[in-house]
Length: 412
Image 1 (cartoon, rainbow, N blue to C red):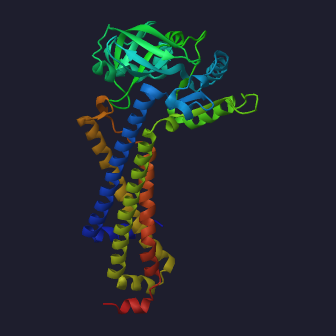
Image 2: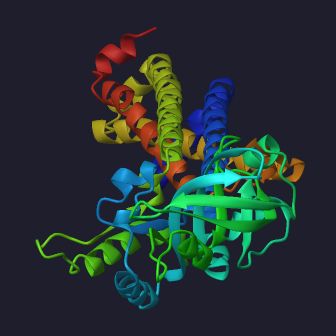
């Protein structure tokens, strides 16, 4: 086998120009794919992080049917305190959960005593909310990074539209579950940039204030946002929690709760899937480049070395060894192109990180993109290149091994 490797390497060195061109094409393809994958995967991770860590949480738990009607923020589908206590017990007993935050969501009217408009409000326990969505504080463009009873954080859209400033008194008016109307004054303590664009209307108040506005004896819960210690374990954590809460059923024997990951709650998941599809097609392009390059080189090698093939066949070299010789040449080309491509790709990614690429996402300005190259991606791309290089060598290798020695020796 070592002799075959030596012969294959000697043949590649003998045709320097062709070998260099082919290896260069493979290297360029590997570099392009590695850079594209590292940047797009990093952008995807940052995008998901912004959505989950500033608003949604990694997954949420609701009463059955709430998500289907979430646009209306129905109060009749809230969890009662006793039901929330069961959910809190499940979450507290789950080691994978880092933090969770109960929310009381409702729609209301927002007034500065001169003008009135609609607003979506999230009643939260501030400490729990800031632990569950730690990037929420980064959305506060003005004001303090905390929330007390009697205070409200309002979106930029309303602050600008109604000319409301920090410290101003405003009124929230809402209709409770039985149809009566109630209002309460609040002090504006913060102004929030929207996590989804300039049209966001979500504000935050203390959950006890929300219960007071809605005239609830005890605060009910519309949803429970959950943050995991390890985001990569999201599917397993969701399945585990679904199993835990599946035992809670109503009188008809139907489940009381439902669990939704961020993917089911955010339209940005479609963008994340699009990135995955783009990455897949880029890898297909790499396979095509390697396949065509290696096959072209091997076919040319067979035609240029017909007399050589006939000679080694005439002296008793078995067809299998001739076939192996050409396959090893393709393997060597794939390995050389993959290794050089891995090195240059890693260097290019390092340069990109040193230069610093910044971009705007939603209302977050100047976010720094840090491209990361995962060992798994490096091994996957390299493996694909080498396997395709070997596969591309098969047809020319089989052709060479089937040549008749007499016919080959007659070739000029």
